[in-house]
Each structure stands twice: as C-alpha cells, then as structure tokens.
Length: 416
Length: 165
Image (cartoon, rainbow over all chains, first blue to last red; front, side, top):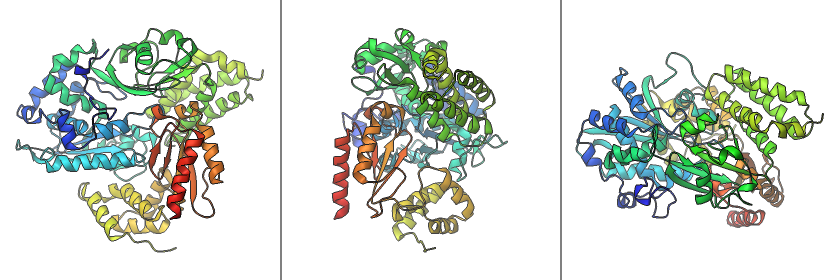
C-alpha cells in the first residue's frame, strides 16, 4: 500500500481544508516554484523524462516524449488546454480534484507551460460542475494576486495567463479537435481538416488534469522518488475511484500496479455480500470492457496489465458489479449513454450506437433472438473499424467486452 | 418575441469573458454568454440569442446550433426548483430509479416537464460525476448524493419552502 508520506494528493478527500491559497500552501503547494523556475526548461524536461511519467488520459503517452515533439512544432504562439470534461459514467474524480486540489492543478499547469514555452492556458471544465468552476476561478484569482500566475511569475520572467472555459454538456469533447471547436464557439464535432488539431490557429498541448497534478511533486521530490513508486513502465501513482456494489465507495490514490482486489478490499470495504458475490468489474469508466471475477482475482491496475486482458486502465474508475445487479440492464444503460452522446458527425457511430442500443434493448426486454447477438457482434466490428473518433470506438468496447465474457447472459434472455 | 437585455452586472461579466480569448475570437464566449443568460432568465430564449448574437457578432443560427447541441441549455424556462436526476451506471445500480420516481410523484410531474405553477421542473442527465456518492441528483445546480427516496423528498421540501417565501 502507498505510504502516507508518498502521497501526491494529500487532500483529495477534503479532510484538511479547502482550496484557498493559504490552505494549499500549508499542504506544500507552490513551495518549490521559486526553485524550479530558476532552472532551464530543458533541465526540467530531463527530470520529467527520468520519472517515466505517462499521461493519465486516454492514450497514456510518455509525457516527456509528447512534450519534446510539441516543443519542436514551429509557432510563436502555443496553447495549453487542460481537459476536465469528465463525463464518462463511473468516473468521479474531477469534482474532488477541483474542490480540494485546485492549486496543485494550477501549479502543474505552470510547470507544463514553462517547459513547453506556453504563455496562454485554458482549463476546459464540463458545464455541470458549476460550484467547482467557481472554486477554480477563485483559486486562479488568488494565485494571480500572489504573483504565482500572470506576468513575470515570482520575478523569474515566466508568464502564464490561465483562464477557465466552461463548456457545454457533451461527451464528444473528450476528442481533442471537438473540444477545440467547442472552445471556438462552434458545434463540438471532431474536425479532421488541416487545422483540425489547432486552437485559434495555433498548436495546442492537451493534458489530463491528473497528469499535471503529478508534476509539482515530480520536480520537488525528484524523478527517482516518483519512479520508485509503481512498476517498470507504469511508474507513479494514480487516482482510483471505486463505486458500485462495494461497502464504502471511495476515491483513493494508489500506486499503479496495485492488485485490483486490494483496491476493492482494502479501500472500498470489499464487495457487498463478499468477494463470492462479485460478478464483474469495469476497470476504468464504462468505455473499458468489463472483466469477470476470475480475472479480477489477480489482475493489477496498470496500463500494461489491463491491456493484456483486453481491457484498459481508462479513467481509473472501477465500477464493481455484484451478482445481485442486472448485468444486461447495465449494458443497456451503457449503450443508451453512447446512443445519446454520439455527436452525429459520422454516420457509422451515430447509426451504429443507435442500432446497438436497439438490439441490446430488445434482448434485455426479452424480445431478442439469438441471431441478434451475431448481428451485434458484426455491428461492433464495423463500428470500431470505421468510426472517425474515439467516441465510436469507446461505444463498441464495452459491448464487445461483454460479449467476450458474458455472452451466455445475453443468450439466456433471448426468446428462442 | 419579448426583448432581452443583459443586466449591467452580467454585461460586465460577459465583457470579461470575451477578454479571455484572443482578439477577434469573441465567438468563444458564446457558451459563457448563454450560461449568463440562463442565470438571468432561467433559460436561453430566442431573444437572448439575438442579444448575444449582436454583442459577439456571431450569426444567430450558429448560436441556435449550440443551444440545441448542448444538454446544458434550454429554450423554455425551468421551474423555480429544477431537479436533474443522474441516469449513470452507478446510480442505476444504487436504485436511482426509486429515488427519481418518488421525487417525480412528490413534484407531480414527469421528466422533461415543468409543473403548471412553475415551481418544479425535472430532467434526466447522463452521469453527474458523483458515482461514489450514488445515487445523486442536482437541485438548482447543487449536488446531493447518497439519497434515499425519503431524503430526496426532504431536500425538495426544503427548496419548496424557500421558493415559497
């Protein structure tokens, strides 16, 4: 288990106060800023590279590699966008992160921007987080007044202007180009044009808030400390949320590579009705395929281990499903979510998600035939191959994962 | 169509929003402006879109597109007490349907409706991002978690009493 001394998110549960600057400073935020801003961006990049930090978002790329590429892109003006468009069912981190650890995020933004030569950053927050946005805006204003953001930060000559962009409600904004269009005031649809991957016509670096929150600790405590946590290739810590049929749903920080069972048993108080009552676990938000009990028994929570069992770490949000819950009903809800959230840009995803929902809905309500399952399988394949953006692929993965492990449950529901 | 004008305060807020974006990119403030309009009159009416269109120099049709795309905006006023039920996976597992039905029965409406006296309105939203506190609902933007049908009704009663005074 992660030692308390090694924790990065010391206040993720809000136990030691709120998000004011004074409270955040008392917890160690901003303490190293004056020190590391004296070093050159290249030195800092080196440290991040040695730490082995990987993005905590969808693609899990090595942060330092991503930055090296980004720095080489020719442009006098570049942007940083932090994507806090958390809307994947099962994931419940952003609210706590913004409420209790806002300054850690701001400091992370400063570090990423300083290393990559960025002077303008936006934090894109899902619109429904109204109270959290207010807290974040207050935190930014406080940091600006204290000279930690804005012009000539801590008299080191570094600048960073940071603002919040309150987005609408659209899951598709998890796709970068859709988010950029949303920020420019257009309908958020994935854009594959020549300037699709640019914001206001300039190159832009997109990050998950969790990745950025790691940076202050990586720089102040050193790359060796960070890489000593977790396992080779999956260094560091991660926030995990555990919800569903567990005794104590929770949000915890743990090292990558912790056994799934430990997470459920030690932090979330175990499965309701005991481990024997476990039917399946969705390991990282609903777009990751669910895993049956036999795999949950031994699988570790990191990128590579979960990839090896044809699932993924996703958002690090576990949904524990007990035997008393209706798995087919849950699959139906998942399909309904994607049917609603498909943006409609590509017909494959729009129609594919609708058809998938119709088939699953039919089977769940006892109107389906066995041949529908075959159709569902083919539909998954076609949609995954032809969808333009990650939303279509995300819609398929939970369904194909379900077919892999729980096909019989669907067959039982069919009328023939 | 009734006229719409931003209050002095909201107008200032909107101008501050526009300044967050580069020169000539006022369209970026469109969603922000719509949130301000919603705060002011309870919805984003056609008249509000016209006012925003003029301030930001964005075509009316484009704003209309945004309003209809995002789940966050509505074109007709919500009730004084607006409830959003979560229909996420975890809330579903924790019997959110029971909470929803009890609340709807109390409010005497169905989801998507506003009560005739304008006091209550309700809608369903996809995951509110409070899965560890399932089942959850939003009342006028404030999150309430770990609900039971009884506790949810108590919360509604509190809001009802406040709205009455």
